[in-house]
Image 1: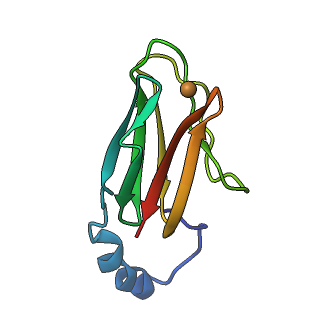
Image 2 (image 1 turned 30 degrees about the horizontal axis):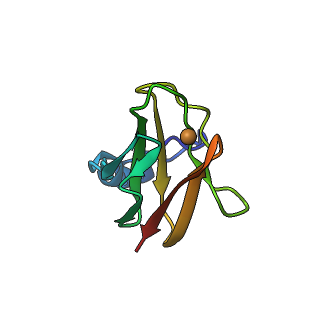
Length: 112
Ligand SMILES: [Cu+2]
């Protein structure tokens, strides 16, 4: 991450170098949920905080993925066949969602 440009004395600059050089790339886990035959599969899934859920529409008609609780944490655009939507769940809790095009299509992400 780049902060604002500031002038540092050479000594201070060197003092900061080790921290800046430490590798800190962490790839968070991702979990797949398929949308097929007018259903989310699995309809209920439990993940650890920081997990990204990736929904993929396997049907040949559009579906979307919309958080049920207000304020909505996520809302995808309508997904065509094989299109995906991803959302990272950082907070613990129970997050019901549905397809706004077919409201009987419902799912839940439990983060714990
Ligand atoms: Cu749908």
